[in-house]
Image: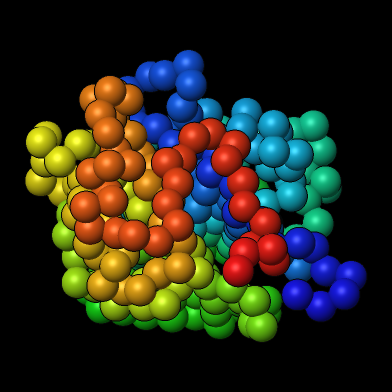
Length: 264
């Protein structure tokens, strides 16, 4: 990163699921670099964790939505509502909301229910990415790449490439996906769901060994497993992942943070 710019940090705001937990909020990841504050997913508990990480809703410049399940979007309405109070002028630039095709319809349906309460009066931009093929969009400070993954029809994974810095991939929810392997090629950090232990494999989700196998094939430099349902708490998630992946490995927990500028 160039002198005078914000450090490139990645913080797991929510490492849990739809199951209520005192320790784990639902899915959310925060990336900060230059003047960008990028939030990936906004499950229940996101705004509290955002405050604990030192940011407010007004600081967030971009938000990506991996798919529309409530544990990934459940706090979107509250987030938009909070941007109006106590003073909407606290937002210095419009919020860019990014998701798959159908995002605009989803937002309009929410607006049909909540009306002006979530109308940000010109301070919201919607960006739809292809959910049938890989796509990319250039923003002023980064390149965003997306690809469809196997979970829901609208499910996409995100790759954020920061010029002269690092590349981060966020899987969202997915089963084994060749698209995710391609998207993750040589990434510096892959934040990948491993919702259940190997012995409890469920359709539409990964296990530690499956996530590790894809990370190995993609030659990612650092793997973080996240999105843990309760059975994961009693399982040897590290050991299962180590059967297929030998690189740097972390199990996510809320507020786990990485300074990407210091990553080898």
